[in-house]
Amino acid sequence: MTQHQAPLTYRDAGVDIDAGDALVDRIKPLAARTMREGVLAGIGGFGALFEVPKRYKEPVLVSGTDGVGTKLKLAFDWQRHDTVGIDLVAMSVNDILVQGAEPLFFLDYFACGKLSVDVAARVVGGIARGCELSGCALIGGETAEMPGMYPDGEYDLAGFAVGAAEKSKLIDGKSIEPGDVVLGLASSGAHSNGYSLLRKVLQRANAHPEQDFHGRALGDVVMAPTRIYVKSVLAVLAQFGSAIKGLAHITGGGLLDNVPRILQPGLQAHLNRDGWKMPELFVWLQQQGGVADGEMHRVFNCGIGMVVVVPASQAAAISAALTAQGETVYQLGDIRACAAGQAQTVVA
Image (cartoon, rainbow, N blue to C red; front, side):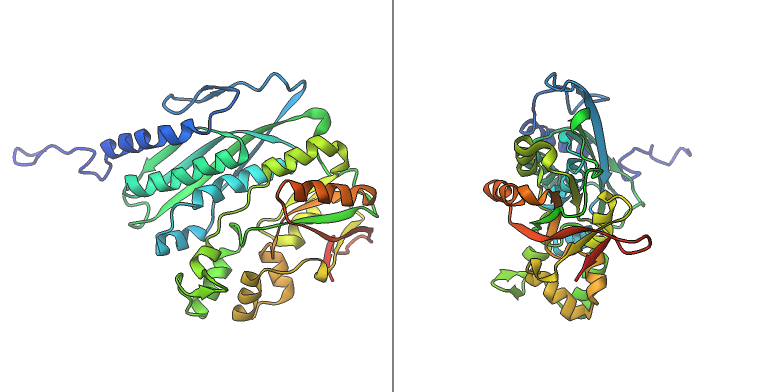
């Protein structure tokens, strides 16, 4: 350093430690609302501590991680930061739910070029809300301010969920057999998948977030947060146990790629095209983008966010129980035998 140069600080390099401390202060009361049994130490330490509840006899830990994808680009463009945190939680907790796991705790990673305490607090507020909706605790995370890594006004998110299930009650789809019924739980919209194509359609249609879409602002419809199925499905699992043979979270890959993940070789899920009504958002996306049926079913959830496979003899009772828990339930089709090389999910 020459005698005429002022000493450099971290703030001069683009990192504001005081802003980071202010964000932690904003986050702490949000995280406090998510506390539950098992939390020994949460936000503020080097590592969060969690004790598996003693009611588990043979606990198996089930973990999941995900992000929000290019839905974030719309959050930046439209300044809608309050619900992407719900999306972040939903993607991971719904994933571990399909194995019969109860989400226990959640960690988040928020990275940006320049930290806006207000924007970050809005995002984390959504994360805390997602944790409340899924019954898991927000016990830690990382906020990384990295100058030059992200364009101004943009950030990235990642989330990590850990849950537990009894070893004897894990759901793996191995008991699924021909004749079983495939139920579908309605999605709340596009959730967090297919947004690269969705944004292309919005661009082609010259759409804007405030335009009317069947009585709602298009932005509200497009940015509707991912539905979290945890509490309703866990309640029905507690009631019906092993009658729930398989669960599939309909994420990237849509119906065509996700349902086969729970099917043994030689089995096919035959879904009736008229078994559910595709929501107006997907009808509009298909029309505006000229998207083929097969592409729709492989990219978007098309209105079905979770698939549940059950015995035919208990399909009506389980449907009623899920409905009582607040889910909209469709009988989508059934499980059939198929030859090697045939598609394991067919919409016809």
